[in-house]
Length: 228
Image (cartoon, rainbow, N blue to C red; front, top):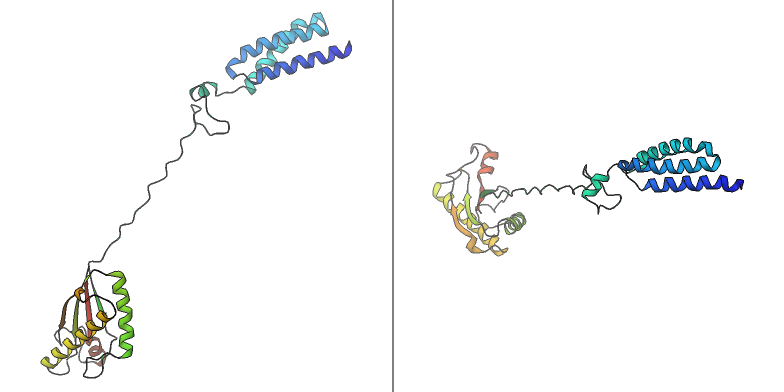
């Protein structure tokens, strides 16, 4: 009989706490009532005079347990009853909206409409428009670039000389050299239709002082103007 008196209160107390664990904080009056009944029963089992004290203590314990362990978001969960466990929720108990990824930044590609390639380091044979092997290697680099960067561009080739010699002579020589460069670029794969002009400017457009050897070297050049 003594074991029953000890075990029965434990069974009743476990049932009380299990039942309240599934309730909400707002259900604390129910927990208090259940706790009071269970407490009275526990007191009566031990001694009839303890029934009142048992009801008071059991009711208080039941209400406290419900308040501590109850779900404080019951009303919020009612708005989104299907929210899975473990999902982050907002103040209404509804799943938080997934963060909106910022729109990708599209960088505008700036296309240079007009560009001039100045070829200063192509040295023709003396008094000639014939390209050297070294000249052809340099033009191969330019040809590769033109085919990659400006496949549909319009190209204008102009030849230029220093001030040594007559104007007529330099005009003719610069024309021949511009034509020689153009022909080589065409042979490397650039359509001849891309070349809208091939002219000899002679010594009329110097870019440096013809009084120095360095300046005259800069003036002896071929320019390729690119119109994209």
